[in-house]
Image (tube, rainbow, N blue to C red; front, side, top):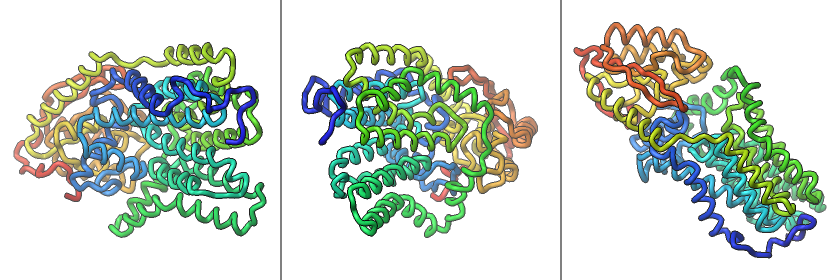
Length: 508
């Protein structure tokens, strides 16, 4: 590269952690160490376990949005499909998530090394790891996967800045656009960062004096490459005759879902978690001697990530993960050159430790054992009607081997008032259709766990269970650090002919 941050050592100056391979090993070990106590817990995170459940059932012919409904893009389910093809143990996706997060930290380090010394890269990558886990990273959430693609796209553009400044567009730019396109198939909000990267390329070409017609051709090519993965998926659903379900899941449902209360409180918690990283990032962006080109790129990237964050204003902590990539890159400009950089990274790690409270290994083992016990009771007390997990962990379908009675499998989609009629299936009609099939076992939280409650759904399920089933046992499952009692209603409708002939209830 033709420029460096003022006062830093050139990136060619090597150190023990200067090689990519060394960083990859180090960061992977750190990620695994940070998440090790959660490994094997089959009730750790409702979202991740649902994605893994869908990935497993896709191997049995299930089609997302048709046989099981959600609003996440297909790319995320394809990742879990690939993982489930290797192993159906939850360890598989938990380890893969750690590897992806470690790889993202490596790419962050490489970006920073383009502008400063290897120490800045090392500390920026380390910052990403220790901050990501306090935002529920490295566990299998969607940002664990798409952050790597966005970071790689940014790295390729940074490496091509000199060529772009001379008006030359080479293959790394097209590769960056392809990575952005893949990221969009994992989470729609990556569209904003993808648009920024494309605009940065076009504006740089304009500043280089390229003719407008040439810039227009580049713009069209970037847009086509970025849109191709999503268009290919959409075309497949059109060909299969399920365009309506796909469009509703990708667009209409995201616009229809109401905001969840408490957003201001959650946003305050997010800002408190960023209390050390954010000042370092702003210092790196505006006060660390960064030249105009560096500031322009990082500021635009950060703004684009912020727009994506604000586009879904529920402010769950893991929604912050995409912001961490440009923030850690910007912080790396300070961590790579300031004489107190070691003290800064130590302060950041210590502050993060105040927010990070992983469960003990004994807690995770007990959680998995309780889920296994529940699955055994489901199998023992199902006379053939199948399972309805209502306001209960969806991963019980995987552990018990029971089919889905409805495409609405994720707990919130049936039991939350906010999700009422958000899918293409009317929620009350879906509940009625499930109960008409005569579930053989009903598992539900003794007290409503998901708020606000869909009163109609809960009353209908409770009435069915009390009228047609026997309360087999109340089991205590471990959910989000708490012990939650769940009722297992079994032996329902003993004379009902068996309908549980498969495990997916899908396309077979």
